[in-house]
Image 1 (cartoon, rainbow, N blue to C red):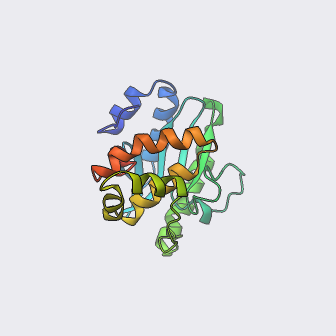
Image 2 (spheres, rainbow, N blue to C red):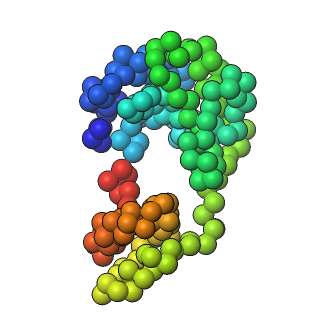
Length: 196
């Protein structure tokens, strides 16, 4: 899906789940949250803070609670999509319109608003040292100017590249990923800049 400029655009260009996304949108618009678009997808905020987003993928659609780890998940619907990486964000994945539970959604939104009002937040762990995989370090040393270009990137962009290479399970996948990202590093671009 391309980067949407509006929520209408996001829903209209969704290949699946248009009706379900519209229903989720209607539920969220009936709350005190403000509707906006961030990272190319619908996001709902309270007092400038991200509360929940909606989105659709091939196998599911759903909600993303930005501080979902702080919510009482009494319905047992929230999952951590990237165990070990994501500390605060939690997803509520749905596969059909029957999975949409308006009363529970409203209750979770109300609780998420209360979390913001109480000043509670799980912050990103930005102080953690960046572990650059040896395969990436070696490739940076071989490519003229690549080490300096990598060091010139923000710590967040460096971490994205390092984790992208480290997460490859096979050596040939690491090699392909490095070949793809080296020109991006040399250009000073981040791995996920197109989503920002």
